[in-house]
Length: 358
Image (cartoon, rainbow, N blue to C red; front, top):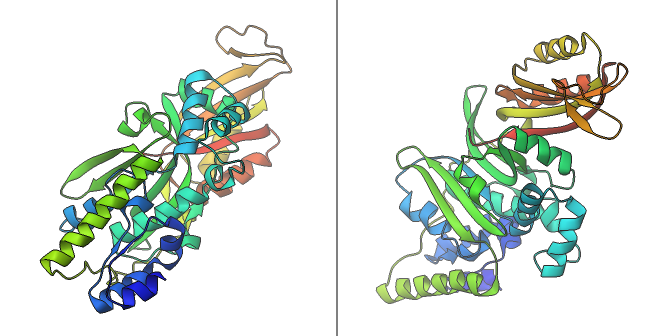
């Protein structure tokens, strides 16, 4: 139906993110051939105006990176886990009761919804068609109270981020697009996004850092974005203008997630005995992963206590190591974590989180 309307020369207004993430290029090409436009402000971040700023206001600039919170359900869950120390399952149940989460929350908590929006944002910002299956996706189901506690103590919050950025692979400019839980410094603007709100943080070459914040969902909020698109389409027709072309693409390559470079926080449960840290440091160094910070806590059978006080510790206990790294390539980090997991001194790799926004 949309293609028929476009082929007839009509502008199209849609908030269907799944359609745009999978067939957007086809729709834009059809629109360009007849001088029509596809308006889709409501497809990403609800009432937040982000499509028009990327397409129009920043048309003469060069977007380098986008960090976005584009799923209200997961932000609500992670925000409450952080502020209340609540468990994931309990907050999810509350979110379902309050209508923030569907009875089947898979699309939200596994990152599918955010991945569709990431594909749309990256395609527009970098003038490159980003297929949905090229977006690396991870959900929040593995984030537990221990992960949140470690993040809090290190000065971070955990957010499900859509990360879209330009990177260099073998000297060639490429695009990295991924969705995953990430650590964000509490001083960063994205850390203040509470509840079910959304935000898009854009880093542009000339304009610098820009933050777009507001309600990411809701009937009235989404209707505001749709109505704005309808008015824009009507004004264009009254003025007799030609649609904004979006089918011309730079066709930059999409880099696999293994080529992304960022910092990491690795949480390990290890034997509490001499030489363990040296062994782990050696494994990291062999994998070209440099240590920035290390925090160690002794694990008692009932509780975790500070190593300095040594309360409740015993000679045959375990320790939890929280290791912050300098920037490393994802592939190097993943291979190193595999070696850590198989090491005799590591009982369990509790979590690995990327650090974004530094």
